[in-house]
Image (tube, rainbow, N blue to C red; front, top):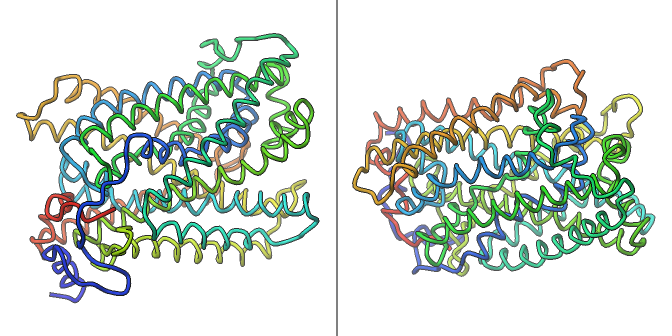
Length: 519
């Protein structure tokens, strides 16, 4: 047996034990601190409401030229609500910080579970680290505007990584409280924008954006590809299942509540943008101004102070998403380390807070390394014609990684839908009807597979914001970065089955063997 296999076996057989500087593996009593509101906030924070409105909605208008963008959020919300039926039903029987990984392992087999775990790790890391690109650019730009201070984009990123890292090794309800405050403030400023938009309405209270005829047009594929990113973080409810006060109810309720709030809020806010700017002008203005569109609107109609507050909350919106995705990555590392799929050290928690300390520190180190690579590369970057060099972290780090991460997470949701059917076929005595067992998961699988195909087909558009741009090496490399680890994981799962049956049996079942270890 190799040293790696010995480490894996040790993780599978040790349930309490080993106190180290980082904390303990499996020590401590139950620390279930999160209720439905806290978990819902974690999901919404990951979707970053103000970031979606300022960045995602304006980009969708600009790139696709489709006025029906607002209606797409409702359509995607309905798809995810159908997905949530089977997902929530399965959450009553599978409680694991690995969430999608555990669901797939128990529904479709352990090798596929291991493959999905690596896809999830890469995707969540890509989303989290990618957001640092937009965060660094925005903070650096605002420091220059407000105080005349010029700092490289990577300086505020390193500060952000440090703060997120500190929150990551402390009690999860501390993160929930911080995110709760930030999310509430985001909602307030977006609601103010919405009200002002409907009040200004230069072309009247138009409902053109809500007309299905303006969505179901040739550009719908790109619209849905952009829109699905607004719902990322959807898995968070199940990730926090082990830390929820009542996992069998909390996960389902938080999932439905978050999807409903996100879908309706984004639909109304995107519609408000079309009304406030004018349906005939919103596409052109979005292409010209980008994220500054809503802040310039605020400055013109609500005053510069409100616009400045909006900029501050845009930064905190990004920060909230960073914290949420960081916590998700840390819990994936924890779950895989606990079960022996990855090194056992990743399964250690901090004794005082119960947080997955080693997983959190690992994600922090990864973020520093990737940001350092991009910072070095940016020194010699030549921007596309007409664009300033300051946009480097947005056009590369942010755009590349977040779109790759979104692709991976849609792939996972598609496979999870199929896994739900497989799980309930194996557990026919489970208390779930045909709608939850088969019909809803099958419908969700078809719908999500369609969105996945659309994302892949429009991946060049997502990377370049140019529908006429040719495919490049990046167009193929980035999806491969997400998909190839999944194939490697399947092979690793098969190797574990042959070489280390004890670890293999643990895959996707870690929380059952070592209950209440996290949080």
